[in-house]
Length: 396
Image (tube, rainbow, N blue to C red; front, side, top):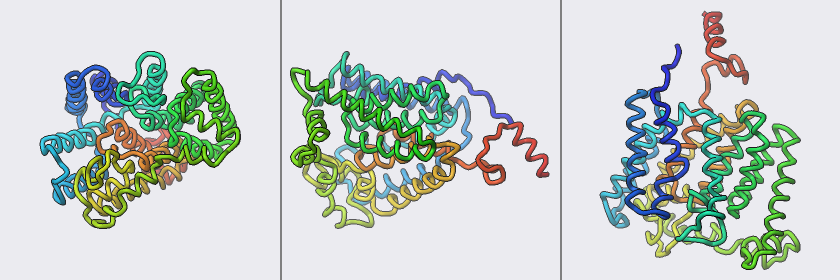
């Protein structure tokens, strides 16, 4: 059966731009709250309009159930950390619109389209250098539309992983672009994950090892360039000293305010209520721990706020995707690579439940890795609809 043609694809492109380029949050910082709110509500309104026009064809049931468990248990356990119930309900509604309606958007989004939007968003990192500076937190690290170096690093990692299966003429360009732009963020999470993805890609071809040398060369160029700046970037100085000498004090400087130290602040509260958690928003800033830093770990956030049940459900969902990604690695290497990048990102970020572009990407990967009913019969070969129809006829 042929799928129905898409109605008003321009709506989908508008949604992808608003979500994947993080425009609502970006305009809140660089323009004003009114425009930010307008763009935010517009993105959700467009998602609903898109679903009405194109009809529902499926759901991410795991993400719907997980969200229901997380928010329901979180609000029932405690409301002491919620300053505004209205904001809580708005967050819940937005999450379910993103999952329920956004599923249709990402389902119709091709690899080339997602790659283009990720590359366009990543290029905003260059804009952060030459056109605009972050008025909230300018630490000599650049994040573009994404306002945070680790978030910008995630976008670069997703684009880098997707570059392994994009058109051959664009593969090298994509890998080089996302590597260079990601390194500019100076995100430790990006660097470690980028190294892992490159090591995994060697399984596809030994030739992929050359990206390790290219990435190291780009990092050396950044460190060298930093030496000629009137005001040197502290993190680049630390990395440069580590490359040159590997002194212990430089390693300690790089590990200063590391994520492991942040997580440790929440362990006592975590094990006080391991079954049902401490309540919604308890593991964010000034929650159960009186600190301006949240837990910076999605897994600990879920466990600490709503208990072990939602966490196990979420981990089960990811495990299922990892198994599919491993089985389909040769055919769809981007699936396992993107999943690995996201899984590590979740260890350093606690905003997943409100991070629309991260949710979009995770849903897109889950759809890409859904098994075809013909996978077992025909192995890893990709079949078009006509071949499948002929195979079905033969089977009958």
